[in-house]
Image (cartoon, rainbow, N blue to C red; front, side, top):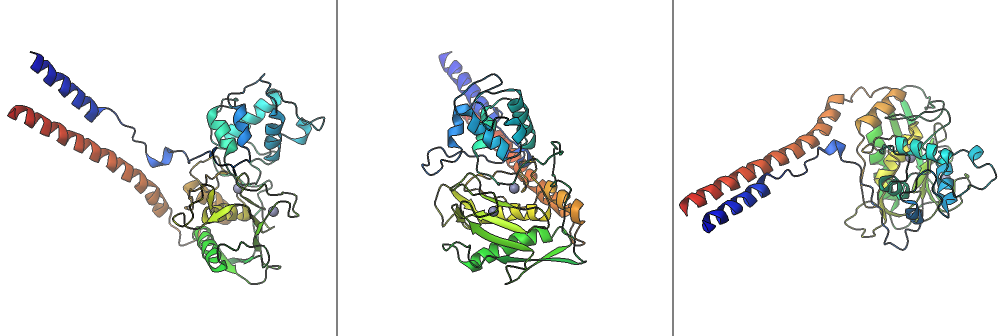
Length: 359
Ligand SMILES: [Zn+2]
Ligand SMILES: [Zn+2]
């Protein structure tokens, strides 16, 4: 009897292990990784905001005025909200409205509170371009800058780009930086009827690329390691600025720093702004505002492509089906893994029963 009970309990345990539902998410709904590195002493920017976690309307936390300045900086609180030149430390109605708008614009669950997801997104390194423009309401997809500016040139359109002769970094060679940007420009050029050509003439180039540190004369000073990674300007301004203080990387196998930022991912994102796209709340899209250190996001997603094509039209050689196929194939890949694991489980159970019968 005891032996029989032993067999059954073992059988139950085995079946539980084999059939217990394991998470099996399709790739498309996996949120973009937002990693907050709190152990690194260099990652001081925005790290202190962790103390506002779980704050909600009515809360009073010392230093909350600093967080309100962050919200003002990225376009969620206007100067008008900062009536006496100093924000208070009280989580008031205006701030709640700003938090709700932020959650909508960043594709987060809208709670109006500084829940852990929201505070973690706030602390993530990101692009310095504002998320909101006046009179533009929160959307669930791609957005443009105010007035929907775009480049206007003859057809076929060619935009020239050049690298600053004086504002570059010395630990990545110019030829490697050239290759990275060429690849980033090619991605956008493959979906719209616009060509990009490098020129030596920095002054007259349409798009001017450089690495800058701190206050560099455009009213948007960089803030050191992490925090703001880069910024660029809407058409037809053409300035694309990268924060010199970041640990820029083109191959994470060679760069071991915890705060390394993938140059090609940021280049691809900033070119989107140069062309006229603003930030999207779609987390997997290139035009999502934040990017974790040591992560790479270079492939244009449906949201990016639809956005830029509504400004410039489609490249005649671009096929939507191939984009949909490549997005679906990653889902199929995951699905296949799930099916395979079920087959494996069934095989194990069959072998188990066979062994039970033999003994
Ligand atoms: Zn951006
Ligand atoms: Zn700048």
